Image (cartoon, rainbow, N blue to C red; front, side, top):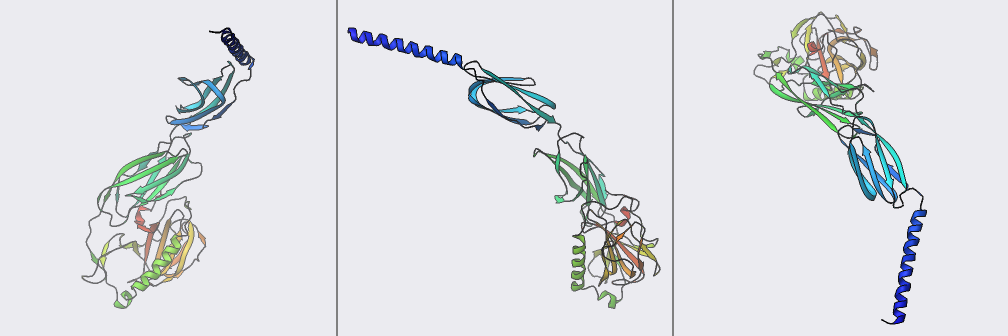
Length: 382
């Protein structure tokens, strides 16, 4: 090797050593701790994953401690998935750079219990009866954003007071529901998008009954036409669409008159021998013409007019989809929009419309579905 080449090699080694020393010197002079950016959920459902993102302005050695968890990793961006613990639990974060500078920060995650629903209801009902469903969840649990109640897959009315640790469902089991087991589902959704489902089996029974032949004069029966039925359906649908979300009633429902039961709810009937069978959607109470009719509970008058089949009719909106209807009146004593109270006189017994004699046809409907009026008497559903 020539003298010049050896000299060049020596110079190169000296320069390399000098640069290395300079780098070490510079590193030792770096006293600026790394900057951290932390994305952490303030709340999470205890026992579920809580996602944490830590970002530094340079590669660092991280150490994260959360409860019994103690993990380290060399990186710049770190995505962690922590199992949320109950209560206010701190996440301690350390980040150390290559010069030994350390940054320590802390995040706190509040682990809240799941709103596990408890459901209470009867386990057996008659077809046509209303079914009250009580839903509750632990106080202090994750916030509830929605409650859905279904019966055989059909959504039902849910009544929920703001801030309450529970809700109430009101199920109308339709007339003609097949006897046997049916499925009631309660689905509670929480603030984290987690669904909590409770399923119950409800047994529906059906009373045995014979078909009754109702004798009505042909001139009166002639009023029951498709056109007349369409008029009534439209009036009912318009009224049912006005209901408020919360119940207006505070007390149990009561009988509107002290009449004699002449036709029960759900009774099978024909108006012509050998004709089609229909089911009675209300309760008929025979009474003298002019007998005062009382509101079954508090509410707002939604219908007060004469219809071709129902005759002079009053319908009261009790809120939460519950309506009481009073058919065949001789005189209506209230007007639409009027607020009435339980026991207030709203009309007089008569025989207008499709009627064979003085009586009150009384109905109780939930979202348009007829239910047994006697099942409401003395009860404060749901």
